[in-house]
Length: 81
Image (cartoon, rainbow, N blue to C red; front, top):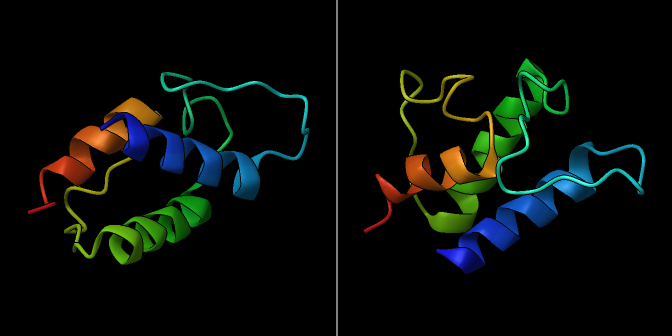
């Protein structure tokens, strides 16, 4: 689980942070904090589905479920076999 958190956090930092000095952690608000917008959430969902060979139903891919790395890991783990 910690490895998954690290992979997702690294992806978010590389893809969505413009300020390289900005520090974010596992519980940093991503959507409500303005780091990830709705368009970026779609690309993040696609990354997760490809990386972990899962399919996340659209009704589960809510802003709340994507609002922190910790919440994303909970979501992904529902679909990982």
